[in-house]
Image 1 (cartoon, rainbow, N blue to C red):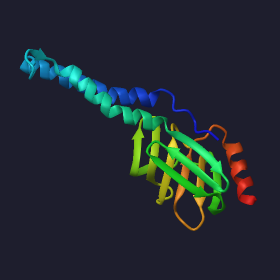
Image 2 (image 1 turned 60 degrees about the vertical axis):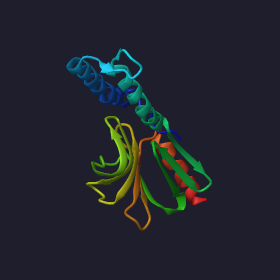
Image 3 (image 1 turned 90 degrees about the horizontal axis):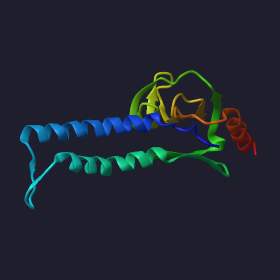
Image 4 (image 1 turned 90 degrees about the vertical axis):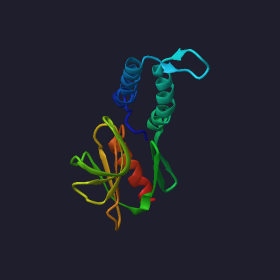
Length: 172
């Protein structure tokens, strides 16, 4: 069971959102004040310092976006998505929908969202309950839990095989 690959879009967008503004700010700071004073003597530019700072701050985001997995161990389904992990008891699953309607993510309760990648807890227009989301484009699996309004939206490579495997474990 594998989540759908993210591709390059979210990484390119994250790069553009973080590096381009910092470069522009650095060049503007250099242009307005000349060069920054260097405590050791001489002059230095703000651009290299900003590039190092942005690289240090963005590395955890890039690595978190790569942390995605779906595992089924015994009767527990574990979904890891960026900074978030959700564990489900397979016997508590009420239904599994394949290619249902678009969830229309309404409000990010505690999540990480960038164009081409959604991860974390959201509320949706359809369900109004808290939904755990891990998708890169559009989720193709919706798991509803028994007796709660909590669910999971996933995007997996083979949704039919995923559903059959979960049902087989739930029935045993």
